[in-house]
Length: 266
Ligand SMILES: [Zn+2]
Image 1 (cartoon, rainbow, N blue to C red):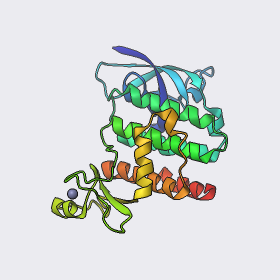
Image 2 (image 1 turned 90 degrees about the vertical axis):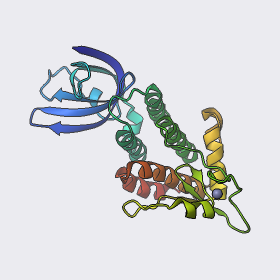
Image 3 (image 1 turned 120 degrees about the horizontal axis):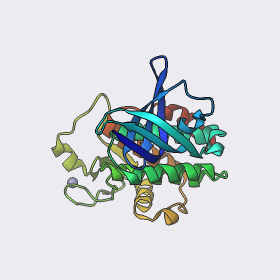
Image 4 (image 1 turned 30 degrees about the vertical axis):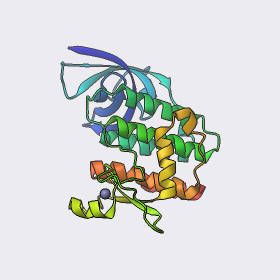
């Protein structure tokens, strides 16, 4: 029997029969872990500790290599109150946790991704009306997570296949596939495929791509100081969503709410 104590953040919580819930945690020690929690616990227990988005110190147990663990205890470390009180911040967080939920495999140890999510929530809870800063924090966090699971290749202005410069004449848009930017000739040769109505490429303005390159190659403290014009912000966000969708073959539910809120800010 293994007993594990680790820092963790719940990503999702679902009913499981009449008396139990399954809470999927992102843990520091073991990656994404589903844990069964009895709903009838002592009155002293604070269920807020295992609500999605709460950073807690979690203890669970089960057989070695089990697929599902049983809950033992949790204590709140940070409830991220300011994020819960702001609908827009909540949506940033919902969007990010949904991505983690479907991108990460259960029990894939990844301390880095846990740190990225924790830092993301900390940044959100310090938000003071700087929307540019907030978008950049989201983009940088997503890029780090994508890199960490091996699905991000920072696009550049040369073809990822033949290495030729991508822009000729008056063109301003670049076609990007999962490995980076690609020229029309290589794209044609590739024999591309369409999955469920989704294209396997994304087109982006060169100006947005340059900003994305700068974001991808700078340190966090430097990157958060970049100024992103609204069109670039929207395009980079769409691109990062495309990376997620292209890999998981699913849409992001929380993004529909997010879009409305995003449209209201800019
Ligand atoms: Zn090429």
